[in-house]
Length: 456
Image 1 (cartoon, helix red, strand yellow):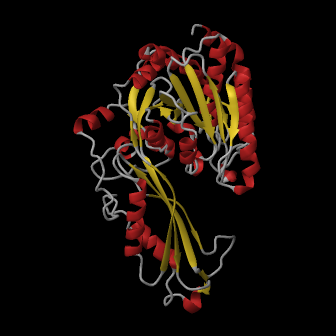
Image 2 (cartoon, rainbow, N blue to C red):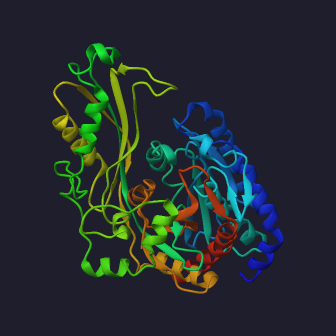
Image 3 (cartoon, rainbow, N blue to C red):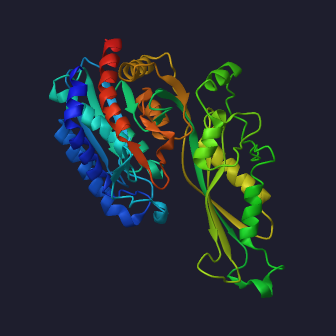
């Protein structure tokens, strides 16, 4: 793999330009207004995989958005790595908070600013370019398959059926995913755990129509007030979640592991300064690093109702709405948590209002062993290119497909991401460092080399 740094230095401008072309397509899977753009992105990904040298590249339909597949089988006796990524992106709203248009990528201070730059187009495209370089030099040491889906940001609702349908096509020995982060550019890490997800939408109804708040206010239940009361009661004064049975299955982490986890560099003052916070908060008895990795959460992701336009309108609204997500930890199950949430929400809602609770999507938590061949290969690859051994780290986000890969394909997943927590994914001004993008292209081939050597 001695060619990597030389080739990347020569090709870096092209690699960056190609990524920026992909970022210009607004593949927002959550918004029907971008439907055609999502399909167009799938075609663009397929074209890039063909150009990289993958065989049997297909855009495979699902009831939603398609999955792009490609492979290079060099020897059936060698191990097979299945690369997973996604080409859909989060909505860019609120647009007014972006410093530059979200789908007109710009480079500033060594970073590419655009929606999807890090999550996950930039990280997915690293694999396409890494495969291209290995094939160019006839240096691919094992077989590779790649799938890139278009529904990750809306829960990967059709990917489970897809994996079951194409189980033989996807047969592999390990799954490789870059959709996570490292601690810092001078301190690499490999993600060894992810939280699960349970996403709900609630609707609270008071009167059968909007009313004059002077004529009816004080006698008629206000659904916004009721919704706020319910949400406030989802946690107690110690930020402990009050949903009945919520913690029953939580896997408690040992004191030894918690101690090791908190040895990772973390400057709480810098953290507060970066986010313009007066202070941090979280479940009593745990540190911020633990709050964002090994403890479950409940958070309101959006809330609306009544009049929100310019000026004033003295209205007592008929309805109020909220989107609420819960991050889950090992042993918690998203379906069970959804049922517990709905039962608790109905239980604590005032009798004066009607409530409707609708599950959206979910995913299961994952813990990856650090003594496996897969982890060792990832750690060796990062040590090779960063010059220091990576730290195993649990991530706070969710990738629902990881548990499904193990369930259906019977294989482990390596979470070798190259983003930073400060990349503002899901937020205005998302960005991805050019250093990180190119470092990923350099590191990924070493994973193939070391994984193959350890397996054979």
